[in-house]
Image (cartoon, one colour):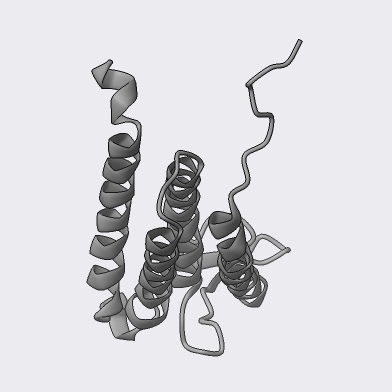
Length: 159
C-alpha cells in the first residue's frame, strides 16, 4: 500500500537563512553573557548588581558603553520575534510560497532585526532610528507572511 503522505518537506529558502539568523542570535547571546560577567549580575538586569559576597555594586556598562539591560533586551527581543517569523516563513514555503519572494522577505527580516539592535537599542539612550524601523518592519513581516500563507491555502477553506 502506498501513502501520499510526505514525511519531510524541503524548506531550502528558510534553511538557507538559518545560519545568518543563528549567527546574529549567538552574537546577541554572547554580548549579554559578557555584560553579565562584567557587572557580576547573573540573574535579571537590575541597576545594582550583587557580588559573590552579597554586597551591592553599581551596574557596570560593557566596554562599548551599553548596559546589561540594553544587551539583555536586545537578545530577548530577538528571541521574542525571530522564531515566530521563521516559523511563518517555513509554513509559507511548505505551502508553495514563491522562493524569490521568500528570499527577499527574509533579507528584509534580517535587516529589520539587525537595525533594531545596532542602530536602535545600542544607539544613544537606546533611541536610534533603527528601533522604529526594526519594530514596524518586523510587524509588517509577520502580517505579510501570515496573510500570504493564508492566501496560499485559501482553497482549503473555500471548498
